[in-house]
Picture 1 (cartoon, rainbow, N blue to C red):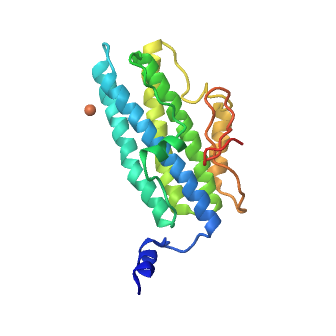
Picture 2: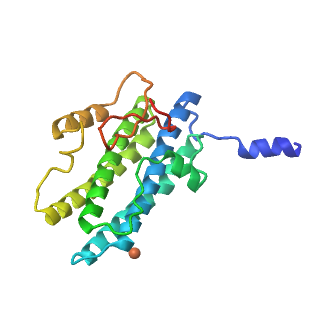
Picture 3: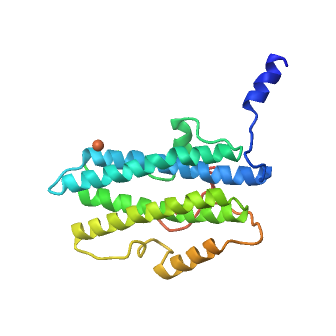
Length: 228
Ligand SMILES: [Fe+2]
């Protein structure tokens, strides 16, 4: 074997199961890679707020955000390795994260504790929705292992959302359902979509895993970053 052949052999993708065709690998790997970029972006934002918080509830907020940051960081390696297991490729750089992520940065020097928690609440809600869409995609392709992992991350996102919602309610004196004010997502259709996703589909459909738009609630971005 010459050097070139050896190099090609070294870097050739190897699927664990061989269960997925090229289009399935491309779509699932793309969806999981966008998810990974968003998880990294949310992790950095949470650490930012963890480090720069202030006020009478600083200790509680500081601890809450540390716990949530640890949870997100723990998911990153699992997401990336899942992509590699199906012979896909994933993130390679900070620049790659920046191109794919849909979590907005917040570089402001002064953000109130209430605004920090409200922003993280909104980000986690949208992350949960994108996780559900990725779950449906994986189910459609029969990738039950990815779907199973995603179910855990949905639960974690909803736990973060719950805690942020309750903590924000304490800050504002308002009580609200964790998903009630997300554009286009009422509690009722959220539940319906959940049940539909978990039932699975018998027929493979090709569609885009999009990120819910912050301003108008429309999902208008493909996972490769192009506009619909
Ligand atoms: Fe810390």
